[in-house]
Length: 217
Image: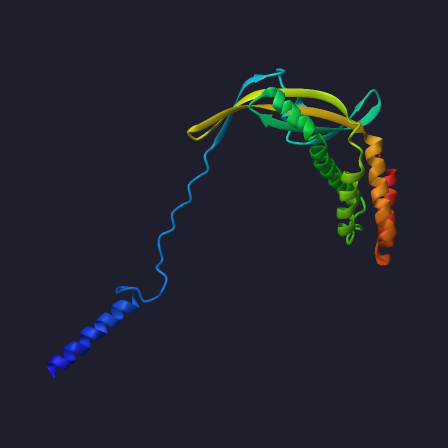
């Protein structure tokens, strides 16, 4: 009898240990301490050589577009760039990517301009978001950048250090300009097309927005 009681006690003890995770694998998930993910190596850039000192503001800015005027005429300035170990190749790559990069910059500019118009409508632009998105796409597609004029170039020879690794390359930047009036014409045309196809309930809002665009300077 004592032996039976002792045996039962041992099994009860083992059962408790296993239910508390003290036994073997019972099919449950073992929780392991979570290690902190390693921090990304800091990237350090050293300019070894550059075409102009100091670098022009448009070359060091993070913006791919800007607006300005020359001789009383307003322009949209667009920036394209490329990198390569060879300077001449970096230049050719920048020129080759001109159309695609300028289309992206125009899309950003159009988004900015449409946002300014809707903000000026004191909340009356609600419901037009989808139409604005389509209009932005149309503007970036329809603005003719093939005749964009070169407005400046800048290059720098850079050493990039990341952890124990480093590399050197040329960064070549080209600035182009297009007539602001042509950009606005594309914007007005794109939104005019949206107004024609807009939901009848939003027609009045769409027309107000078109009027605001037409009156923009």
